[in-house]
Image (cartoon, rainbow, N blue to C red; front, side, top):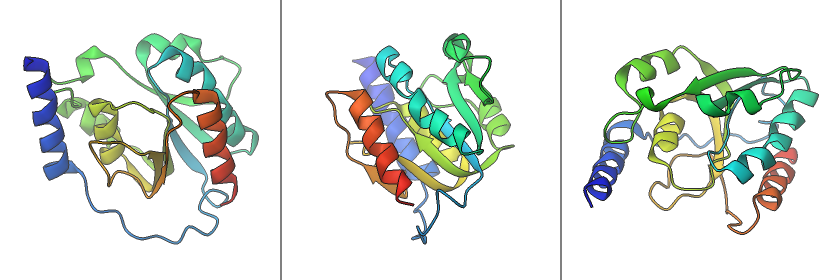
Length: 175
């Protein structure tokens, strides 16, 4: 019960302090013209392994891809891949489930053209990261708690992450 209150306080703080209204942007070629991508990989094991097709797509097209992953899953990423990695661990999370101030200052050193959040489940830490990262365009799955995180939202197919990621990639290829 205490955890639920912490989560509610965290989402309240996130809504009030960190989430800005995103500009209505021109989506013409926003994927093809971008060069720097941050891809937030999901924490769920099955979703994590299914999400690599999205990262591979951008890597194949000679884009600079940075993966945001838990430090425990860092070793699951193939060393032959040409990805930069930003990782996080339990010490980077505050008591409310939000990123701590030190981690926020480290994160603010980076900026990206496009952020793609592949976390399909509600996660206050990932939502906060999405809100904090400097990116021109933010793409992700519709969340119940926060509606204004993304410029481009996709409806989540709860049943199968592989299909969900394939649909997301197909949608992004149009741009």
